[in-house]
Amino acid sequence: MNKLTNNQNIEKFKSNSFEWRLVQSDMRNKLGSEVYESWLKKISFIEEFSNYILFSVPTRFIRDWITSRYLDQILQIIKIYKKDIVRIEFRIVEPNHSVNTDDALEAGNLKENVSFIKDSYLQYNRIDPNKRFDNFITGSSNKLAYEASLKVSENISHYNPLYIYGGVGMGKTHLLNSIGYELKKNNKVMFISAERFMYQFVKSIKSNDMVKFKEFFRNTNILLIDDIQFISGKEAMQEEFFHTFNALLDKGSQIIVSADRPPNKLSRIQERIKSRFSGGLVVDIQKPDLELRKKIVQKKTQELNSIYSDQLHISKDIQDFISTEIKGSIRELVGAINRVVSFSRIYEKVPNLSETKVVLKDLLNLSESRVTIDLIQTVVCKFFKISKNEMLSSRRSRYLVRPRQTAIYLTKILTSKSLPEIGREFSNRDHTTIIHSVKTIEKIKEKDQEMVDNINKLKNQILYNNKDYEI
Image (tube, rainbow, N blue to C red; front, side, top):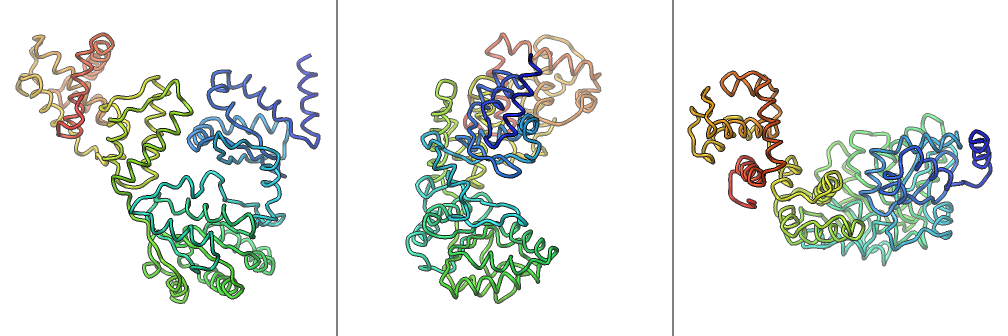
C-alpha cells in the first residue's frame, strides 16, 4: 500500500503543479518531527523554475542554519519527485510579509522588472526583498552613503555614477539592494556582482554570443554592480565594461557601483575607468561607531526575540559586551548574535558573559598565543593562593589537588594542546591523569555552583587579564 502511495505521489510531481505538501510530509518523516517543527516548517514554497526551486524563510539566520545542515537532504527528497531540480534557492521574507500569489508572479515575471539572462545564460537575480531602506540602520559612519543612495532611488541620474566603498560587511550590498528594490517597480534593473559579470562575459566569448551579451547589459535603466574591484587585471573584460558604462551614461541610465576601496586605490584597473568612477559621487562607509553598533545589536536581538520569544532572552549585559568589544564590521556583529543564539538553542540556555567570551573568542581577536599553559598555571596558583612549585609537585594534599586539576581542565578547554603535551607541562604526568582531572572537574561542576563560578572567573582572568565583565 505504501509503495502504491509513493508511486502516486511521484506521478503528482510529474504534473505541472508543484505539490509542496508532499515534500513537507517527507521531510517530517525522514528528518524527524523535532527538526521539522523547529526549522523546516518555516520554509514556504514560492515558485518552481526549470531546474531549481525558490523558497522563502523569515530570517537570514534560519536560511543559514537550514542550508548548512539540511539542504542536501531536502534536495534529495525533492529529486525523488523532480529529477530535473539541481538546486534550491532561498528568499528572505519577513514574518509580517506573507508570500502570496502576487509575490510569486513577481518572482516569475522578472523579465518585466528585473533583467536576467535566460536560456543560454544563467538565470540570476540578486535583489532581496529583505534588504530595504526602511531596515537599514544608520549612524554617523554610514549616513552619507545612505542619503546618497536614497536620493538616487528618488531621482535617477542625480548622481551618476554613484560609487560606494567600504570594508567587508559594512552594508554596501544592502544599500545597492535597497536602490534596486525601490527602482525595479518602474525600471529595468540589473543587480549583479562583478564576479558574475565576469562569468557571463567569459561564457559569451566561449559560446560566440557577445552580441547578445552587449544587448543584454546595455538594455537596462539601472545597473548595480557589487564588488567592482574583482575586475582587476581582466583587460578584455574591462574594455567591454568601459564601453557598456559609456553606452548606459549616454542613454541616461543610472549606474551604482560598490567596492572595498576608493577609485584611485583600485589596482590593475584602467585609468579611464577609475576616472569615470571618480567623475560621479564617491561616498564611503566607515567602521560603525559604538552608538551604531548598539542600535544594530538591539535591532537584531529584537528580531530574534520575536521569533524565539519563549526560549531566547539575550541580556542587556551581553548586548553591551558585544557592542563594545566587536568593532570590525556589521557582519561580525550579526554573526556574534547568531553564535549566541546557536549556543542558546543547542544548550537550551542563554550563555553568561564568561561563556559568551569563549563562544566569541576568535571575533574578539584573542589569539591562542596569548593563552599559554604558563599563564593558566600562574593565574590558578594566584587564585588558590599556592605556589607554582606546590602545584607541579607530586604531593596529593587536597588543597593542592583541586587547583592542579582546575589548571589542567582550563588548559584542555582554552588551548589546543594535546594530552601528552599538557602532561609534560604538569611535571610529566601521564595522559590518563590529565583525562581523570578533566572528568573530575566536569563532574564537580554539575553539582557545585561555587566551582562553576570559580571556573568562570578564572576564564575571564586568563582570556582578558582584567576584572571587566567578571561574573
